[in-house]
Length: 230
Image (cartoon, rainbow, N blue to C red; front, side, top):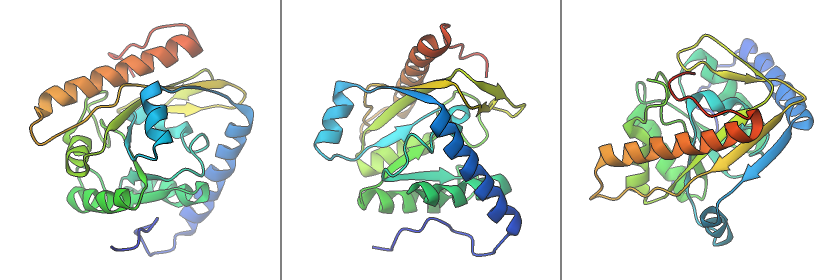
């Protein structure tokens, strides 16, 4: 089995070296100043207790605060081949995680094969079902294909931040700010088999992600999650 790697690109870019160092420092500061609430299901806790593997799913615009809460865990994440993706790919190893470069639009097949290999080594893939370019809050086929081929359950995770601002990207990315609070709510495990109706499973995963995001939003911001907006 090939040894998993955290970075795919070999060229040294000082822009990315210094930029990723700044992101790492800011992420640590965020973690130190943010109160984190966990809402894990009994089903998930049993999977953890038994040492089972699984795939995390989270909406694309909720991913920026995940590095600190999941630090030191065996996480591997699919990171786009874009210039911006290079920053995150360099930060992940600093938190004990691995990056696989690719997306559903570039290098997707190769990236999914690498994810399957890394999952076999015991790492938990973490994917954004609506990434890398949307549509927002719509499940694409990549995560379902990975779940089917690995027979791993998908664990939906929904988050909310009290202190944040949104940027004008396609997903209205939420950029976390310090001295706030966040909630991470887990949903029902979703399994994909060879006999599964992929459209039905995609709808089920979307519904579960919206449900757990709504739980986190109501807990942190005291308002429902509006999946018609960013």
